[in-house]
Length: 142
Image 1 (cartoon, one colour):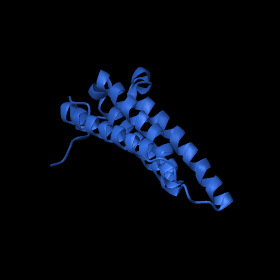
Image 2 (tube, rainbow, N blue to C red):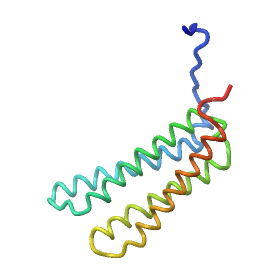
Image 3 (tube, rainbow, N blue to C red):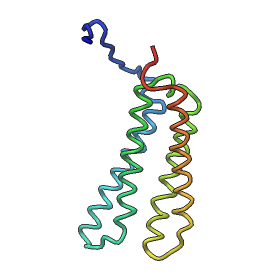
């Protein structure tokens, strides 16, 4: 089935929408990947790759996952406008903040408690995202 050019819709969010949940997810993700890049450069410069697992999680959970969440909220304004988007952001960001240092502590022979806590908060974030996705679907909804 062919779409006519008039059937195509492009969503360009307003400034207010950009500064909402999508912006928060992307902003936090950008901070994470910047930190991950600097950390990777430091590991390469010193030859000490003991923290590679924590570094990888900072980039994957902190940048990739947060960026995908941000993309979803940018493309799905009804979900972004809900209070649940901010609850989701709080869980997702907290998960990264707990998980990455927790993994570092675990791989350097310290306690694994923070990594476990961060894992459960990150899991809660993903379960919350699944709920948001089921509730709002994907896209503008019009």
